[in-house]
Image 1 (cartoon, rainbow, N blue to C red):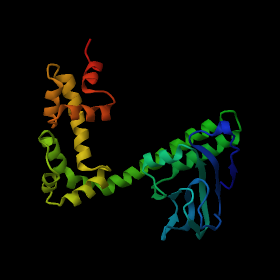
Image 2: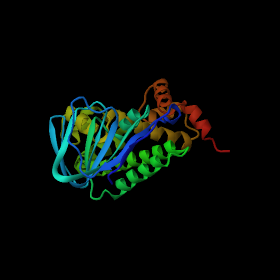
Image 3: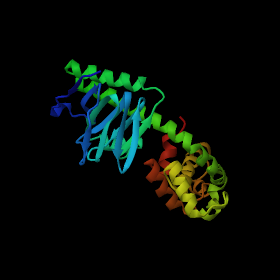
Image 4: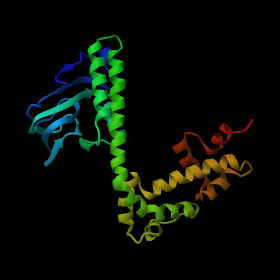
Amino acid sequence: MNNYLFALITEEDKLPYYVKGVGGLRNQDHIERPNGYTDYQWIHCVRGAGKLLIDNKEYIVHKNIGFLLFPGVPHEYYALEEPWETHWVTFDGEGVQLLMAALGFNSYEVLSFGDLKVLDNLINEIYLAASSKGLIMGYECSAKLYTLLIELRRHKMKEEEATGVSKLRQLEPVIKFIENNYSENPSIEEMAGTINASPQYLCRLFNKTFRMRPFVYMTLLRMQKAKELLIRERDATVGDIAEKTGYNDTSYFCSVFKKHEGVTPSEFRQLHRQS
């Protein structure tokens, strides 16, 4: 591919996320942007090799490697082995920032793939959709863009799983301890003791692995168990359920339950009442 186009975006076309430009260059130009670019960008290499300079770091970008750049992030990239062929898409939208946060992307990402066929096909489909100039062109481009971003997240998750297995295994005793003792109000020191670690280390490890603190995880587990008990044990009072899930104060239990579920324990039970 050695074609590119930039979409004409009207106010009606401004979906939560929309394509601004798409294409490919058989020999990528030297790009230097000390103030970053105005849009989000995904660029991947299909032939040759180049170098990306960003955040005081250097990345070699050869075949099957790509990078995601946020707006306003200073960067530079240039060819090392010509022709350095790249395919790319630029995008924006009011919903992109929230979507990026939900997908776990921040500032920039450099991702390595075994095969770029899926992403290359998606960029080609975006290009064809953008070329059509039809009435639903914007919707088709946005739908395919969303699929591309989900594919990036799916790949990143595989990388995270590969590096996170050891962390998860290290936390297995803590998880088991919480599951067996959530009704007894275990302390952070007791949790950390299961892996002979300090509370501070446990919190850092837990946050890196699950993106939450141990007590937040325990609260979510308590809410899960409370919902099961509310449905299964019809004769138990809300106070009984609170005590069984580690809450000595029924009013506090009800407030936590409503915060997480949007309804009170009694309302939840009523919603799941068998006819």
